[in-house]
Image (cartoon, rainbow, N blue to C red; front, side, top):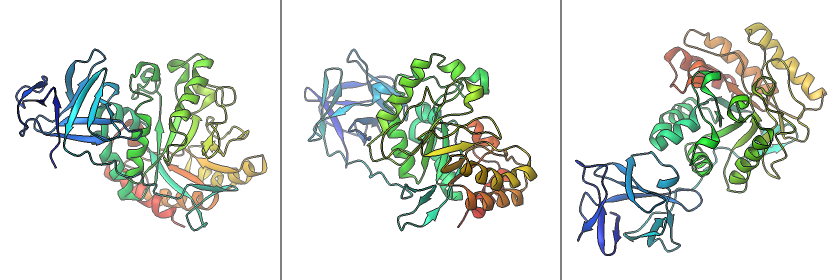
Length: 380
């Protein structure tokens, strides 16, 4: 059903030949005035004019503008009345001519429940979560929205992954590919719930890694703690399926896994973060401990068992292997299968680390073959 917006009785629209200008002077709704209204988690909506394929923006001054389709930030997220008859922000109220469909339900691809040191499914049977890298997923979401992120989620679910490891920060001068600084992103916190909900609807549980390149991104300890707390406050209790980590390689990347990361509260499945390879931080009350193994196949295969035994004997419960040998186009699928088989036996979560997932790229054929073998190896 077509949806139109009116202001003072006149219809809004955008001419396809003039996609940067919003008009509000038409006496009836036609194809240029037809809009799609998408409801986000938390009750906000975005509006896209279909013919011109642009987002409606209402600036803080109340000016009507457009942005490219999918570029949904703070100014494109609009409030909607309880009866669905009015949309607006910044003292601008637009009347809805039509019916706004309710949001798609949040679908968790797995019953996220922890018993002792393992995940269990809805029947209470132990399972191991199989994940892959999606380091740039949140950057892609902020820049390109649903259309930008969808191909990566589709690729992951086609292969059988249920988790993607996502960096919530990054300094490009450190990692060369990702620049994401929360304090510089106007829609950073507002988009967290919609991002996770979109992942869930496509069968993916994001592992949200909060502190990355903190020595550059957020060097003040107080800022880091407040940021961690705000991320958790934004997501906690929203009915979303996610895992959250204090950060990546704290001993290298400038954050304290104890002082900068506190308990996010009940029902949150979390870790204090990872250390550089072949070492770990004690969970100190966290659900899980993260681990980077050594980057040699033979040692890594042996270590997948030895480190699990050692960590359990030294105060760790649930174990997440979050960054192992980086697979690439020329890697051996048989090695991926063997590692997946052992990790599924000894660990609660294991991430298929790969060069394309590090860089925000879809998998090359050789890497995809290794990913398929990894997933097959992790089946219980």
